[in-house]
Amino acid sequence: MTAKSKGTSQEVGFGAAMEELEAILGRVEGDEIDIDELAEELKRATKLLELCRQKIRKAELEVTQIVQSLEEPETATGDSGEDSSDSG
Image 1 (cartoon, rainbow, N blue to C red):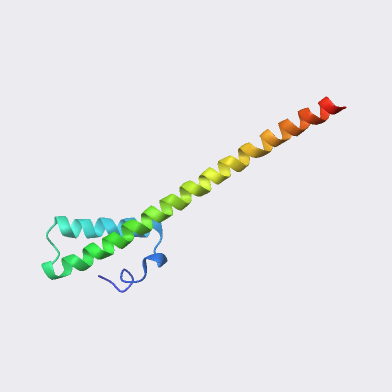
Image 2 (cartoon, rainbow, N blue to C red; image 1 turned 90 degrees about the horizontal axis):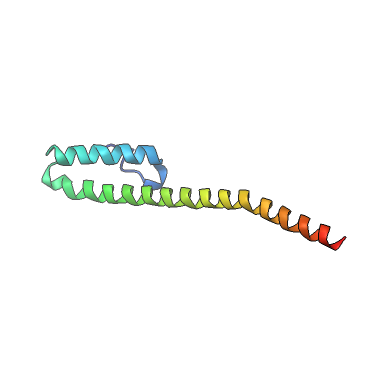
């Protein structure tokens, strides 16, 4: 493992995390990992998976908020416009 991959998972972007996960998977499937390193590799993979899940959840939340903000002005404008025309 490189010094970069041993850094905190918060420093890793989604794409880099996925690449590192794929590399770990390749080493595990290819029997390239010594049994003594296997636990450390799996711990790192677990941290990377959690990081990716968090980033996906955050992106989903942001997209939902953006969609809601795009829908709200139309509804609010339509409602207030009808109310003011009914009053006058």
